[in-house]
Length: 79
Image (cartoon, rainbow, N blue to C red):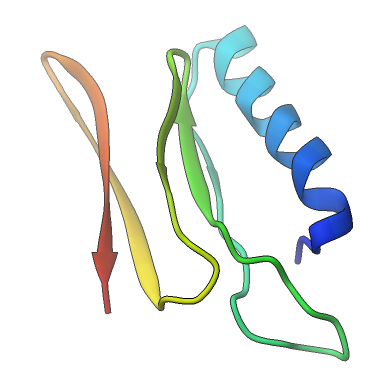
């Protein structure tokens, strides 16, 4: 679980992995308190070209990525 204090550095690491290794990287995070900690939410998906989609901090959503002949795309879907 990623909290507010670690989100910026962890998301930068995920973005860099996607770019450096030309891979899709997904980060799933809690959006409700758990284990006494407050998460920041903001699950996200990056491709080598950058951020494809990011959840906000309050909605219950899935982030879905799909690869086509045009490359990766992603969308945020409310559940």
